[in-house]
Length: 324
Image (cartoon, rainbow, N blue to C red; front, side, top):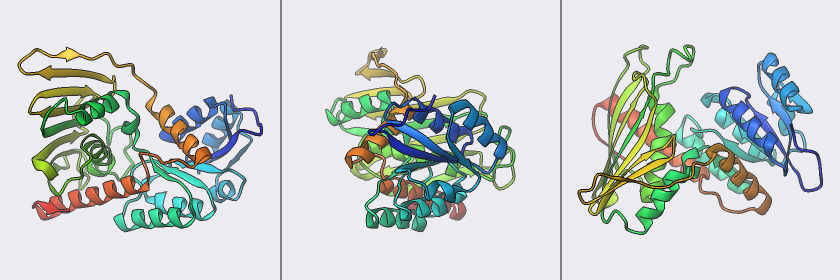
């Protein structure tokens, strides 16, 4: 049920009511201080369904109707190729914006959006949801408190049997789809960005669309990372291993479980209370809009991950290590 209009409610719109757009709609509709007044999608049947389910007063197949309304902020959950055009229009219309990752398809467009947001004094947030994951946040604090000692390397595994069987018409490779999350996690945990990237990848299921890749990154302070991403394995895995001179840890990002290993012990599971990561991300966005506060998943973070994804693709194309 949508929030009741009041003096303290923030009017919100959602553009794109597909798989992730519906999640945004559902989360906003639960917030007491938010009034979801507009939803836009190209599919009229989808619009009718979400309007009926969530009692949304206004829907349209034209996103410009959302941007010309009196909403203060908007979530953009459309296809990647439309992110730049719609986010640019939203910022220039004076709206605060949260864009699902990746921010854009091109690095140059991503940094243009950062500049446009700054010029219009609006918040530009990107859907890097793992910055709101309780397990990853706990490990970040352990890193900051030197629990691991000197950091050696991170191993990240993001695998699932997903594409192209679930979305056969999407022209999307796994590097573009998954690596924005992994580059963001690397940065969030270490405070650093890769300086060198080497990518190996194959397209097994769909020609010219890589579905399996291995990416080696070299970060400052002698830290390396190894990422395995694949759509060919039957089980969903979202794991991060962090290894240091004093201790190691394994993060199960979906279940938000952490196992720590000190010296030669068998591992101890920490008591972490799982949270609703998307809900917390959107609440933080709303709070930032209301209080004009800083957000951890801002446009600069989103633009940098796009830059690194492009460097990864370049490494694959040229079959060599790329210096970022």
